[in-house]
Image (cartoon, rainbow, N blue to C red; front, side, top):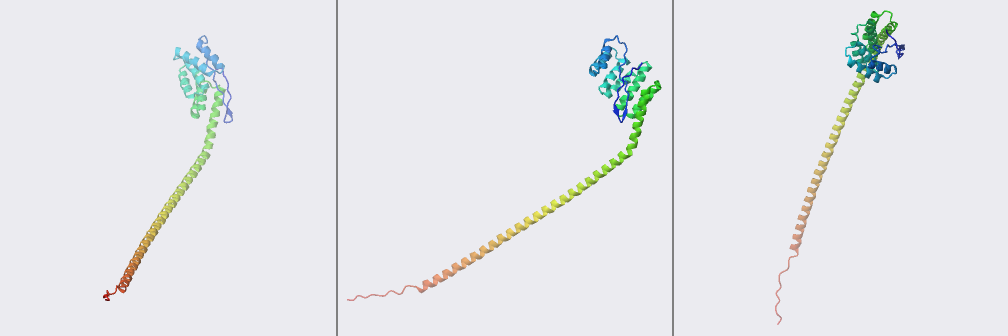
Length: 250
C-alpha cells in the first residue's frame, strides 16, 4: 500500500529515502482529501490543519494520526511527530504499522537517536523483509555508528588535550595573578615605606626648625640683655653734676 515519495538529502555523504506521503484513506472525507492536496503541494501548515481537523472527528483513527505525523515531520517538529506515529501503531493494518516503523526510524535519525532508528528499521523489516528502503537506511545508520565509534578515541584525545591546555592556561593565569598580587603588595609596602620616610623627614625638618627658632630666640634674648647692660652703664657715666650755687654779685 505504500506509495513512496522519495526525498534525497545529503547526510554524511549518504542519502536517506523518506516515505512521507500521507495515507490516502477514505478519500470521500473532505478534510482528509484537502489535507492530502495541501500536502502534495508542500503546504505543510495547511495540510496539518486539515489532518488535525479530521482527527477531531475521529480521535482514535490511526490513519488520521499517521497523516498528522507526516505533516509534523515535514515541519521538522520531530518530537510531536513521534507521538503521532506511535498512536498510529494501533492500526490493525500491518502495512500501515510497517510504514509507521519505517518513518519512526527516519524521525529518530533526524534527532540523532541512532540506536532507536536502528530498532525502528528492524521492526519495519520484520513486517516487510523486502523493504529495500528500510534495508538501505538500516545499513546507513549502522555505518554512521561505526564511524562515530572510530572517531570517538580521537575526539576523546582532542578533548583531553583541550582540557589539559585549559588547565595549563588556568594555572598560568593563577600564577600570573599571584605574581601580580605580590607585586602590588610590594609596591604598596614600598609606597607606605616611602610615605613613612617622607613623614619622618618632614618631622625632623620641623623639629630642626623648632630648634633653630629656640636658638634664635636665645640669641635675641641675650642681645637684649647685653643692650640693657650697656644702656645702664651709659646712664651711670652720664649722671648729672651737682647743682652750683650762684651768689648775687651785689
